[in-house]
Each structure stands twice: as structure tokens, then as C-alpha cells.
Image (tube, rainbow, N blue to C red):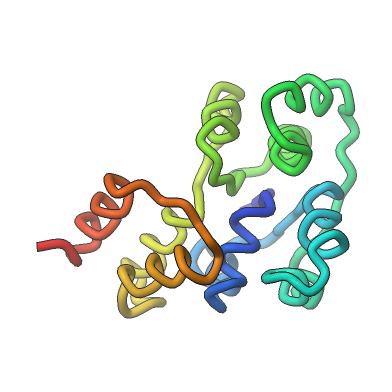
Length: 165
């Protein structure tokens, strides 16, 4: 399976020391990030959460998007990393694009791309017994990564793995 990833997923999972879940839970063969995501996370994010982890992850490759017209069009609604991730997912025929922001997810789905976010990865990890407690991971995500998660999504996620009574 080939996966393209946006910044928020990388930063979120790295912040809670769970970046490995991308390969462990999703069983991917190829993990790609667009150049804009590399710049945002590693170069501009130097010294912040995720920068060292992503730079050290030899299983992540970086690619440049060919279709800059599509990127420019998507940039009218999305940030650079999201626009490039969606464009690159389409160009490389990725099986999955990992995005968190609602507008980016909706755009990707409109382009017939399969989408999963940080919370979805953690749910899969809990179901696969890769993590012990989803609530603990979600709480750490909120505090360590300043990750915004609605109360309804938080409750839905916990309910899905049987952690909500």
C-alpha cells in the first residue's frame, strides 16, 4: 500500500511517540510526503515536535508534485502541505492520503481519494492491540500536540473501541 501524508498527522503522532503506527498498523510499503510537508515539518519546524522524528524516519520519502496548476488551485482553500499532499496522492495513485483538517479531507474525498486521519490511525492501533488505551493517546495528542478534536469525535472514537461506557 502507498500512503501520502500531510504535516498534522506526522506532527501529531510524533508528539506522542507513535509515528511508527503508520507502518505498523497500516502495513504500508511506501510512505511519501510532498516537499511542502518536508519544509513545514523538518526545515521550518526545526526544534519543534516532529521535526527530528520525521527527518530520522528512513521509511519516509519526499517527492515533488508535478501538477503545480492543481496545487495552485487547491491553495485557494488549503495550506501548502494539504494542497501538495492531495495532489501527490492523485499523481502517485496512492491508496490512502493521511489528512486531519476537515476542509482538506472533504476536498480529497471529492477527488475520490481514500482518507484517514490521526484519530483513525489511533483507532486502528487500538483495535490491533498496538496501543493499550485510546483515551490516553487522545488526551496526550491534545496536550502534547495541541491537537484539536471535537467532543463528539472524541466520544465516537472511544465508543468505537469500547472505551466509553
